[in-house]
Length: 109
Image (cartoon, rainbow, N blue to C red):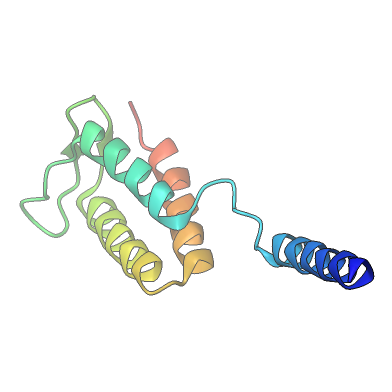
């Protein structure tokens, strides 16, 4: 009986370790968390909706300046990133979010 208990305990330990090892390692930041952070940043920048599709200059609350097509492009990329994250396509969503951050860092202040 003692051998059986020891064997059962060993099996449970091995299975528990296997389950712990099999769990995916969490990414530095999940798609949803990155999207929420981007949403906060985008709202703090505060680009106005371009009044014309090809508007040459769109100013933000914080002094950043971009073009109408660029603001429209970024808005669409944010929408697509949200769709990617919601559909479980985290890699695609995170790539879009990285692209948006890169483009935002290039807007003039």
